[in-house]
Image (cartoon, rainbow, N blue to C red; front, top):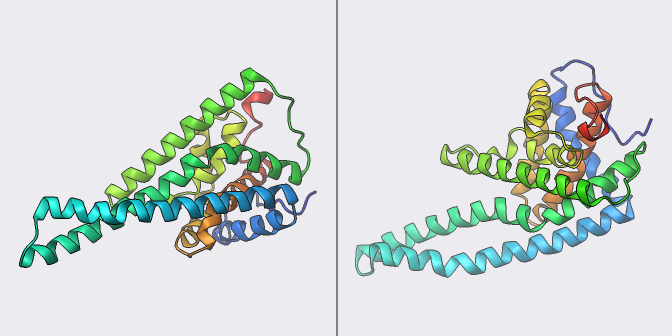
Length: 243
């Protein structure tokens, strides 16, 4: 059995949280030892860095311009406008940083997940099939949109749902295999403590400068390892495409 796939107990335990917490570290080990994953991850990091810099450059002057237009300038209005402008900038940058890299880097997610499964063993990339590609792309896009809606709703109630419950990451390999999104959530609900530990590790990574440039590839690789571990533990049935 390939030792890069974590072994999960058949039933949920308190230790699941720490197993989930360790998944991104396991993913990094797999990435640096697999040339294809390393190359895709470096490309993803460069694109993410450019996007984050672009977000700051784009929103910094505009956010303060919006505040000036709303409040005006002069006496106390100048100070109030600066405070509101910074709040506008922070909110716009935060939402954009959570969503824009996911959308732009979407074409890299399937290659990352597929290369991870190849590294895990017991998986061969299927030959190209246009119909399957279209179905997989549509399923993946639907999962991505549902995750983004969940994140935005989470922001509205002051809960950064990027950490709950790792659904964004494990959904990618499951979307590739044409699982419905409801089945993704059902699998994670059954191992909620595991998913929360995984999501907590990703959430911490989100706020670490430079390290967060590689959030997407780490999340996809770790999510694929989690998917394989859930299948190995019997928490997820075989993929619909194989039935």
